[in-house]
Each structure stands twice: as structure tokens, then as C-alpha cells.
Length: 332
Ligand code: 2P0
Image (cartoon, rainbow, N blue to C red; front, side, top):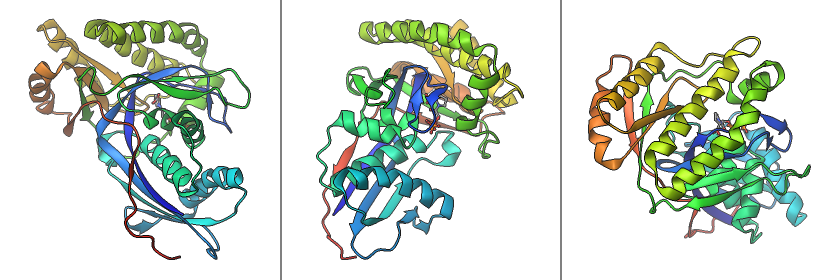
């Protein structure tokens, strides 16, 4: 009863911002992402008889109580599906460095869902896996698939119609995504708290909800047409709009640092110099930059020398879930 799976992280092009159900992780709006090739989580789940409680090892270290409890609550959904209460040893290797400015919860819960389901021989399809991964972290629903992925919000109260689906595979449009690190400290407000506060207090949040579906339609049309300028413009506008909702929250949420603005302004200048390049920013100070592969080197060289930039990670569209054969069936 053991299986290993790997999931890549993803970066939202049209953002998920706000929940309509916090327990089931149901979003207020649909979103769209690119799965990346560089940063991933590989997780082995082994269910064992006679194990008194779940054990979670992250990057070789025994995890604390809070993190282990999150894993246990997540695994309970799988245990319920098979009517068994076997506890598990969960071993995760996280190749999403905190310093990359990318969230590891997306790849983490996607890999855990896939490995747990396979270990219990649940035979779930990707849609069912996406529904389960979502209940660990919303953005994890999208990391089940590679390339361009849409998470449709769904309308049902039980969340069974809130899952991701693939739009375009990673091979079909090879863009470059540069993850620009301007700050590596842990952020003070989690995205979970940030979106909750925004929904509850920001007078700009209704404006977000009024326009995000239209943003998504434009982005999907741009992907269909492989129109990079059309995609980049809407991606950048959508990210700025999400941050504008936060500026209006009480108390206000400002994730940006001076380096964030420096990168944004340099990108706008690059565009004036004739380069097609756009940015997006998640719930943090770091900037993700989209460009065409032929401009990747120039954009990299321009950003890497900025005083406020600590590091630039170059990524490309990556694959969805992959499974590894388990060569050793260890005894519990
Ligand atoms: C996204 N973010 O679409 C948005 C954009 C951050 C900004 O999904 O509470 O870790 O676990 O569902 O998925 C980050 O939030 O939040 C996120 P939970 P998650 O990628």
C-alpha cells in the first residue's frame, strides 16, 4: 500500500482570489495557470497496519504537529473513501525552494493526493484527483495537469464540479517564465488570510468579481490564438487588479517591496524598447515574468543586474502528475 508521485508547481495567469467555502476550498472565481517545469514535490505515501498515527517527513526532517495535522486531515478523505483507518508514513521532497518566491502548497497537495490515491488503489481519474487536491490547497487542483490549465469554479455546494481541466499541453506553446526573487523572507500575511480579508472588507472586491470572468475569456482566446501580446496584457492587468483589491482591504495588504516596483517598471521599459514581456505577481513581493523564448536571454540579463533583484529562476511549461514505480515494498 505504497505509491510515489511527483507534481510540479504552477503560476496563475488569471488569479484565484477569494473563497466561497473555506472548508471545501471552493473559489469565488475560475482561474488559469501554467504548470512550471523547474519546481516540484515528490511524495511517497505508505499506509501501514499497526501505525498509531500519521508520520510526515519533509525534506528528510520530521514535520511539526501543525503540518502533520494538515496532512492527516487531508488523508482522512482518502481513508473514508476506502473505509479503512490505516495511518501513513508520508515522505516528501520539496524542490520548490522558499527562496524561489513560489508556493509549494500547489505541488505539495497535488503530489500527496496522487500518491495517496494510488497507494490505496483508488483508481481515480484526473478530475477526481483535482477535486481532492483542491481540498488541500486551492491552487493544487491545477497542478494535476501540465501546460495551460483552467480551474473552473463550479456552482455546486458539495464542490464536485470545482476542478481543473487542461487547456493546452506544455509542448504546444513553449513560453518562458522567469521567477524574479526580490525578497526571500517569509511573508507576514498568508495568501489564505489575505484573500479572506479582501473578500470581507475590500470595497474593490465586487469590481474583481464583475470583471474576472471576462479576463479569463480573453486569456483563453489568446491561448487559442497563440497571441502572446493579448495574453500578456490581460495577465498583467489581472494581477494588478488583484493587488488593487488588497490595497482597499481593512487593514490594507501590500505585498510589494521596492524591488517589486523596480522589476515592474523595468519590464514596462523593456516593452518600450520593443520586447514583448509582461509580469504577474502573486500574494507576495516576487515577480513572475512572461516572455517569448527568443527574448529569454535578453530579459534574464536585464533583470538579473537590477539592484533589488536577488535571483532569477528561468522556467518553462512543465508536465502534470507523474508516478514512479515502487521498487522496494518496505514493511511497516
Ligand atoms: C493563485 N494564489 O491563483 C492565487 C493568486 C495566490 C495569488 O492560489 O487557501 O495556497 O490553500 O486555497 O492556493 C495561493 O493560495 O490558497 C494562490 P489556499 P493557495 O495561484
